[in-house]
Amino acid sequence: MKRIFVSLIILFLITSTFQNKSEACSNLLITKGASADGSTFIAYTADSHTLYGELYFWPRMDYAPGTMVDVIEWDTGEWLCQIPQVAHTYNVIGNMNEFQLALGETTYGGREELVDTTAKMDYGSLIYLALQRAKTAREAIAVIADLMEKYGYRSEGESFSISDPNEVWIMEIIGKGPGKTGAVWVARRIPDGYICAHANQARITTFPLNDPENCLYSKDVISLAREKGWFNGKDEDFSFSDTYNPVDFDGARFCESRVWSIFNRVNKDMKKYEDYAMGYNLKNRMPLFIKPDNKLTVHDAFELMRDHFEGTKMDMNNDIGGGPYNCPYRWRPMAWKFEGKTYLNERAISTQQTGFSFIAQARSFVQSPLGGIFWFGVDDSYSTVYTPMYTCMTRVPKNFAKGNGSMMHFSDSSAFWIFNQVSNFAYTRYKDMIPEIRDVQKELEMKYINDIAGIDEKAAELYKENPDEAIEYLTNYSTSKGDMTFAVWKEL
Image (cartoon, rainbow, N blue to C red; front, side):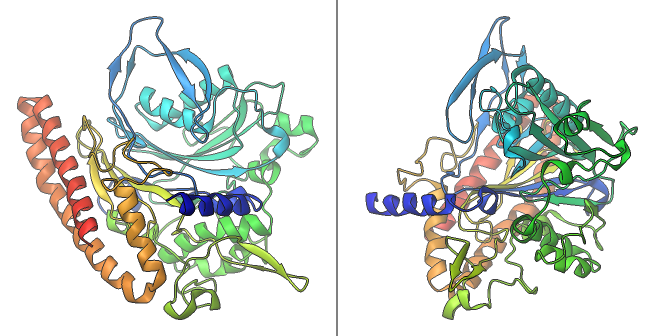
């Protein structure tokens, strides 16, 4: 194992010389009106060579006055500060809480001079504190904004996906630079019936200035840009992305291309933006959100997060890098020079460096705390199994639990390591092995999807008589499905 991890560390160092955003995350946002059953969805792949796939859990708690909570930087594990704890926190499973609030993110970086490493609030802490303290998407935006204003914002530019059973929002933030506490930000509600996506490139351009039902923003988001000399036009012409994270070839080809690939799979009119996605025509920018041709199911959401640009000019299955077994994965570096020319590999949504991914399903037609389902998977999204975890559950499956193994310690009882083994076997003879993996994957996922109506009905009956019994029922169901997924995959 030591030899393996020396190689991983060297690979990570090589990768780090390229752009961070080329190895980071992808998000999909689906509104009620765009889904087949009236759910809202956020889909998220947490991609990093060093991120271990495990299911986070914070139980609901009551706290005495004066209690403090540690702020730990999510990426590094560094202790940053202590802040006052709230009187009551909510149950959180992964990136979704008992009120069906969900958050995801992608890092876009943006202007480096706006990073304040002396600030005390990183993007991961904002996510997980908001999940413990907010019930709705609007409340989460307010919590995030308040924490940044009080304690500063230390990370690079971030795009957040924020959803509850009724609304879906994209929020983009970036710091103000050393000496200026807080961040500038814009949050836009995705119109009902539409979908949005983001993948390590800021996507909000111009935005309505007087429409608080659909757009919220910090009071100095435009004035900071004027102060820095980055914008001098009319307020209504201000573009967040063009100011704080202007799109370039890398931003289009390695980031916006993933958004385009999702959009292209659900909307027949997206072909006209292919030249933008490939980095050839940066003026032909895609809209922030689109309307899909057909309403999307939860399984559609799973499949949209499984993408190697199939059927497009960037299809990774059939170029020379795929080898004799059509493997759609490319190890690092992503770009290199040969005889004075620069060459590149594509950066797809499905990638070998995923730690975990999820589809957070919020359902306004099922009462909280019974309504939220956190469909969770570890390792590569193309070969993972999305397993239902009800967000009222009071414990998580041992095979997915935090502390069972790590990136530096193999665990034979860890779902991440077992899925990692299967996908690495597949990469060696991909076209022969992946059909068998996909068959078992589909069998499990469709069983779980078909289970849900009956599980919901039984839980609702129990909840009328004894809420605790209903929650225990859903906890047992979720953990048993986690155990089943692990057992089937270990046998595979």
